[in-house]
Image (tube, rainbow, N blue to C red; front, side, top):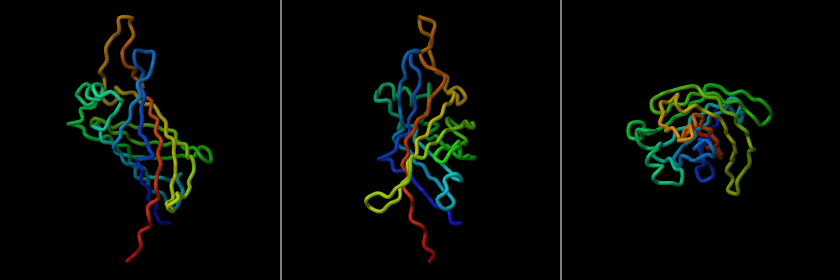
Length: 182
């Protein structure tokens, strides 16, 4: 069976995260420059091979001072480690529209396995005849596993930043035209 290729439409996708701040709220951020490439046999997403890359310097929390801090050696070290990468290692269908996605996340040169939940929101044709598929992806990671340990102790005894980072992404993929043999 021929492989079908899908790529992300960045104007209709977001790669987001949340982290606990001062133990009372969450700071939300995203990476604005990323690509997702998916290959599936035919149209069966339950056997997808997925690769995501994101430019670390595209991090945005809607606060330029905080974003600059995230880019330095306290957090992402973007000059030394310009990209993060996720490569799938397996996918299991849970229901008709939900999947358990496993893969390796490389951040700051460190690779660890992660597990994500994926909801397939549907597939449709857009007004221009392109086939599109929508997905909602969630998961959690512990930032210290990737050497992101910056923190400070509060006067009240708590800490400024939580260990757990919640991942939450909306992805719209566009099916690529099949290659025609010459």
